Image 1 (cartoon, rainbow, N blue to C red):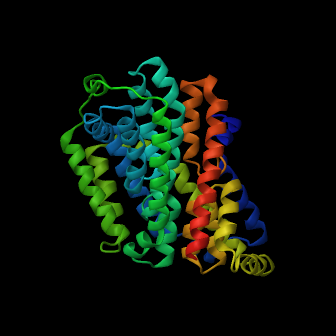
Image 2: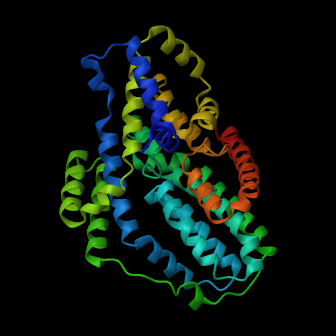
Image 3: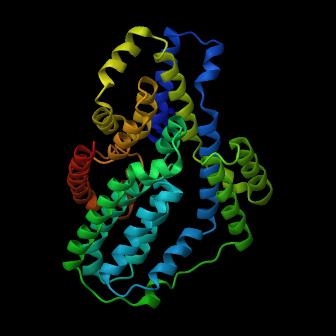
Length: 375
């Protein structure tokens, strides 16, 4: 892979690596660098990504989608299933995996509808799915990478985390339901269940069962019942012997991005002038600064950066989750849907981008209003 192509594909990793290297000129490498790295976050993140990659390769999520589709008989029910898969699925399989799985699935499903209905539904449904994945994922510590990191850093219980984000999740669900009803009023049609579910495929049931067991092991490490090292070792050994090809599907660039940001943030914390200024600037503004920072850096880097300079971790959890709304890069998961639209429906890119931006800003404004009322 050429350097230019690598930078285009791994922009966030490249930026994080550059920042880490530049910061090393101000704080030369020493023994304290080892203390920068949050091994717990990296180990659990690797374990979860591996399990999700394995289940996805086995068609587990496609099978779940087909099972739900078998009960749909109208475009409104179909839309609810497709959007609901992303909203509720992202709570457990992350927003990235949810979109990687269910957006292509949506293209296949909608291709079996009439041309007029497909044209009316495709762009709004994919847009809804993207917002649904970013908002559903905020309810749980495993919904997205920054939640996993901030949850570990906060020391909260899983119940406390869920309660913190529950009001925003419920409001998001109601907004999505209203949007789906509005879209389907203009594209109403009866559906043939046989046509929608006729493309079924089966994975290896024993491998799927293994991954489900490993997922439970990962959850036990997330809620601190099981040491993260045991979960990491269990996942690595089992996958190496049972399904080694899955290890190629893990997003190692995300892990390296975390490492680079850990180094950068650790070094910034050792520069008194900068750390003092940022801590003062953040005080009392954590949610709004996290939202704004997410718009230009995406919410994962924003969470990693800001967490080094404030003890108000709960505010960062709210800010970086809400901050996933807004620009196309506010949540890097959003790029998955955009690329899919650009590949499958290139003439619809501008329409999708316009609808995406408008709907994101509306959702962000309404959810910030909820935060303002609750604070």
